[in-house]
Every structure is written in structure tokens, then in C-alpha cells.
Image 1 (cartoon, rainbow, N blue to C red):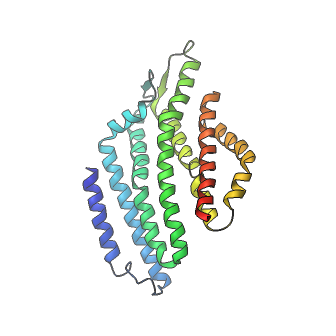
Image 2: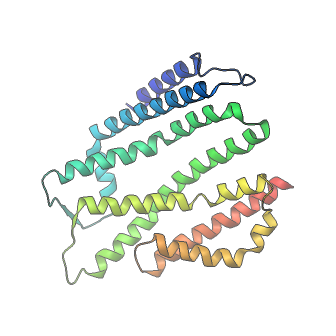
Image 3: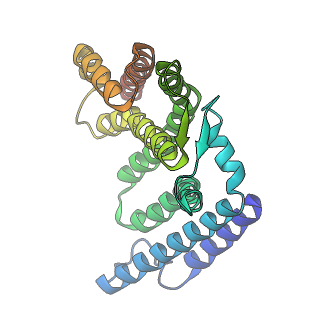
Length: 257
């Protein structure tokens, strides 16, 4: 189903790129109205793509819900109001659609910006954007496999001898989605470092020299992102962030050699 969808997306993209308004030569200057028209066309394309992916996710939302529920071992979910699960399913479908469609949206943004960029800017922005997308999904996977189970285990064990774990599914989804998204954003550290390094704003050596401050900042960020108070989860995330920072600094040094 997803392969068919992306085939249709590629056909739609080819259509938009072959139209008169979008396929302007790089050397030609476009008027303000043409820029606005191109931007509106690409925006509409992204909107309908997101809409179609949301529908596809909603048609198979039960399997997606099972994936979200998997880390919560031993927890029973309740519906406290009519239609609560339905609206939660819509939110889950939209959330997954945004994640799935994000590479396509970035691609459309890249096609819109590329005529106005120099070759140097293109050589910086494109690899940084691709790396940023990859890091974001790595952050999602890291959060789902390690942070979410650790946080849920803490909350379940903390009151297991006093209360029975019956949770509202909507609140559970909000908790998991915020943790996933926050971790994905936190994993953008190397992409930001590479961009700053390639632009000549900060060198890799200066980044490494600030490692003491980085440890404090990463620990603080980990304490904010992780909802549980157990030290294991915070140490796990802070260690990952510090490793990403050191890896990004080393990569910038290699690029500048």
C-alpha cells in the first residue's frame, strides 16, 4: 500500500516539476507573483500528500496503536468518554502521517529554495538536511526502544503496590508522542554542529574545548526530556547526547582537514 502511495507521489512530483511555473531555469529571475504561485502549489501538494497519508494510516490505525501500546507491558487502557479512542486514533494517524511525509515535505522545500541558492550553499544545506532527517528518525527509534520502556517501567513499578495501572489511552499517547518528538529534536545536535562548522562560525576544536559545559547542558536537557526521575533513563539520554556532540565535533574536524 505504501509503495503504491509513494509511486503516486513521485508521479505527482514529476507533474508539478514539469509545469510551467515550477520548472523555471535557475538563471531566470522569477517575479514575486511567480514565487508566491510556486510556493502555494508546493504547499497544496504537501497538504494533500499529508491528508492522503493520514487516511492510509487511519485505515490501519489498530496496528499502529498496538505498536504504541507495546512498551506499556501490564497496563490496561480505558476509554473515559464517548469517542475518546476515535479522536485519539485520528491524532495518531496525523502524527504518523507527519513523520512519514516529512522527507517529501523537505524535498518540496528544497526544490523551492534551490534556484535561489549558490552552489556553496547547496553543498551545505542538502547534506545537512538529509543528515538531520536521518538523525531525527534515529532519535525516534532510540526513544521508542530505550527511553519510553524505561520511563514506563519506572511509573508502573513506582505505585504497583498501591494502585492498579489503568491508564487513559489519550494521555498515554500524548506522553509517548512528546517524548518521541523531543528526543528526535535533541538528536539534531550533530546536524547543527556540521552546519556551523561548514559555515565557518565555529571550528571543531572549539566545540571539543567546550566539553565541560556540554556535559552540564546535556544532563540538563536529559532531565527535562525524560519524565521519570530515575537516574538510569536520564544518564542514558545524556550519554547519547554527549556522544552525538563529540561525534559531531570530530566529524567537523575531519571535514576541515
